[in-house]
Image (cartoon, rainbow, N blue to C red; front, side, top):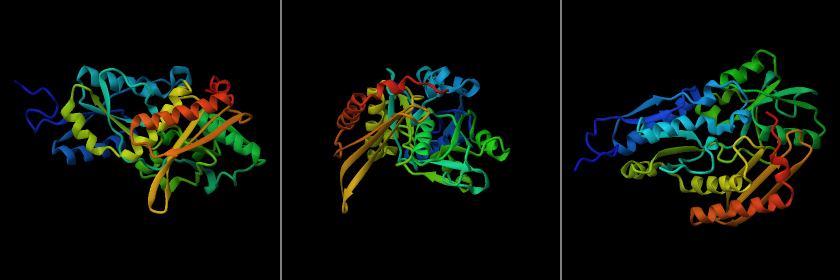
Length: 328
């Protein structure tokens, strides 16, 4: 019987990795490709796929949130055009589609947001009325809330575009600063352009921010097992809790929701997982921010349960009334 799995048959046949065409997506996919080559001993070729999110100039909330960056890659997986795909985990809808499996979540990069401002300024050094660009209602909500509570005067401006485009708004003087994911800048080798990292106590990242998702067809059991070698169990537990929170809030990827799970240690022993969540109006006038701590989950179900528990507490505090707002 012929083995039709991607790892069966000729070992000289390259594995096909589906990726978006952006510089960041290519950099991320290249990192995963190197790791897969090491694990499998197989060549890996990148297959560039254009998604609707890449070609549309509308704001994300108007075209369905960041899930629009995922659909074309998933279609390529299901059709057999590619063998596996790499996504930014924060772009993935929280419901896993039939026929596909999240084979690996590699070790997470820095989950924080980063500021790139004119004249090397930090957030606190920005002048009154500073215009700060971001494509994220989550960032808008928290930046405006922080500014209000600290007597700072800022204007958040909705923008879209790749890293070059966004930083270009600062270089041209159109904006005083932009906020980007620190992980993306790191993977592009551009952390030297960061003028300040935003502490997670100030701006909680998007659920799954800084993590990658490696996805393949459920029928490709051998490939899924090989890709699982790239999985980091601590990252997987953390993002499972964060994404369960997002799912239980019934909020999409473009909703103003932030979440971060981190491991807490007593001396040298990691014994607890803390999950923080925030939902806010984009003008910063209303914010629901809570946290929960529990034993380090021993299963994905336990991690998801922690996320659902925090979501229930946030909903009881009025979070539902804030998530329907769309600034973009």
